[in-house]
Length: 426
Ligand code: PLP
Image (cartoon, rainbow, N blue to C red; front, side, top):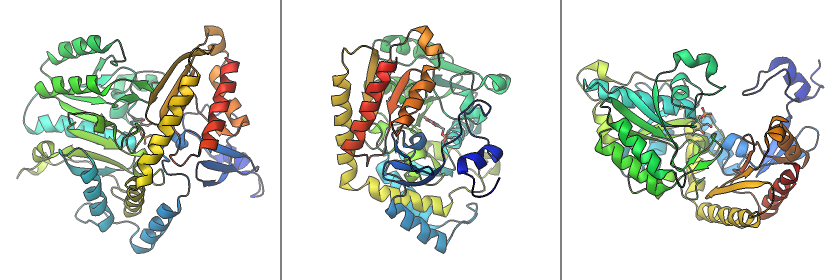
């Protein structure tokens, strides 16, 4: 193998890819460049990134403003230990982030990705009770949820083929049905039953949209009711905004639709505009105060070598510049309106089981008989997208659009046309 061989060929000899059966997966596509919503492949093909490269890229690829800020930071201070030391990017990013979040959020804890942001939130919630000598050790999570791949995050996620080999190491969780339209009352009843046990420490949830479950959506009104019940029972509430954060739901944060405020919040993905690996867990003063003590063992014993990496924080600051620009909300509104119009055009068409939308997130569930589903429909849909130069990653028989906000109307039209073709495959 020489360095003249394609990236794709060389990759197959050395790399192990996530969520990939390496024996049967097609060769990976070598990408050499990205700009706006488009990825450029080594063979000259172009792909519209309609999934924002696993939901992270919100402003478009290789955004010059973020690139400039990151390269400046690299030349100033690339990293410093975050225990006993601090630096301007972390201080400024926390200050600015807290100004945008619900008013009760007062502290920021840095991690490296979404899973560890959730892991930290779970530890904070459990230790909040432990520090007070109160026996509250159980967590509530939604059925079908996905909070990440570390052990705590896996424990509070749907038990599936993803988690099966590790089942015996996952802690017990009370799973709550998602209050999808028509099921709200059942969820409320079940939550009341669970809360009757006195050992519930926390409720962790994806607000308004459960991403990996298939973009399953529920209303802010029912979430407010769930939060109210939890708060009345002194249960810590954890909003996992790893996917929904930074505009996805049509507002800056999904929690902006709520009247109640969660105790803890988790962010990653869009936090740096999809450029650097960074996560944060934020918390209320009430939670933070319980970790303050003359007793050193009441501290939060968690950290990573790259905690609050200055370059990643600088990327976060540059991304926030773009999030706070007027064009940000205009783009969210433009994409939301385009999705609504497209979803309406699908009404009554054969092959469509359901269309769901929350802001810039559009999900289309195809009607499939068992036969076509087990004929690897998902793989066929994925391949058809790539053939058309559109990167869409179906979740089973559900196709969803979660694009960078700079996607043009013309590019959106190509995405929709590709979905139309997919419908004919079903
Ligand atoms: N939480 C939610 C809601 C997610 O959608 C994801 C990833 O898709 C995670 C947590 C895990 O984030 P990461 O992949 O950065 O570990």
